[in-house]
Amino acid sequence: MTVLRKMLILGLFVFVLLAVSSFAQEGYLRIISNPDGADVDVAGKNIGKTPVLTVLKPGKYTYKVSLAGYETLSGTAEVVENEVTKLNLTLVKQMQKTPAKPVPVKPIARGGLTIITDWQDVSIYLNGHKINETPPVTLKDVPAGLNSVILVSGDYADSFRILIQPGKTAVLKKSFEEDKKRYETQTTETTVVETPIEVKRSMLPAKVIITLNTQVSTDAKKQDTILGESDLIEVSFQYRKAGETQWDEKLLQSGTKTEEAMEIEKGTYEIQLVASHYKVPTGLLNVLLTKKEKIREYKESIKKEIQPDTQYKYIVSYDGKSFSYKTEEAKLNTPIK
Image (cartoon, rainbow, N blue to C red):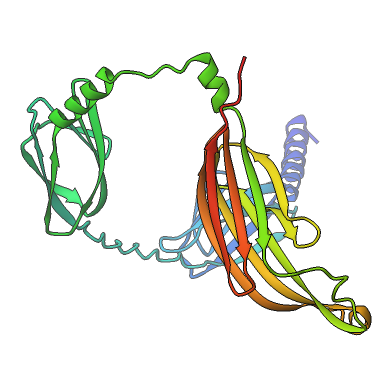
């Protein structure tokens, strides 16, 4: 065998070996879609439209399948040596987005405002915004409802809350001259300065005395029989300072306590005065009937301005038929060092 023939046989053997080796290192990827005609990209390269078959080396590949009007599908497929990897994909239609309907904007109701002042150099602020006009002026397109208006002239200013009705014009009149006169009057008034003694006297409390006078015999001893009754006259004096909720009470009863004295600070007071006539069981009857019986009642509501260093005497009288009361006032003039 010649050398040339040996070389030819050897070359043919190598070629067959390489061909077999090359064939053994390939696999297949087949992609089918419903509907078909979708573009297919594998590893970032377009390989055609579905249905499509491509030859790839074994390994994992990313794919993307897209078709107009449908959601794009993507994923990873593994190609195996000498095998066909088949992907059967169903495309989903894209949701048609309905454009949002514009919400109709309800127009804001409006009205007008006429502003008239006795001074001309007046700045106008409407709802916090300065208006580039001065009175007299009529402002249009003012929102209906309550509007804030501030008028400023020099050192004087005033604020208003103006109700604007739809389609109507409100009128605001302002006199700055009156404000100026009022201010000048207040600053020229003589200020009364209290002396130290007067200041101390204004801090002194008032004295209040409650007295019960009755012409009804309430001596229980004289009426202490086996079955008897005794008369009881009772006065309730309740008081509280304006703005407070708690009542204080002083109680007078015939035969026991007919006068009460106390001191209270100056101020406005509410007073509730209640006077009652009771029949009270005595002796054996007191054991059997412990409840007293009300014969007559008198009520009086009083609002009183209590001054410092003053005595107020409330005298309640009862003649057996009716109640009455009177008040006596007197300055105490307590010595002050």
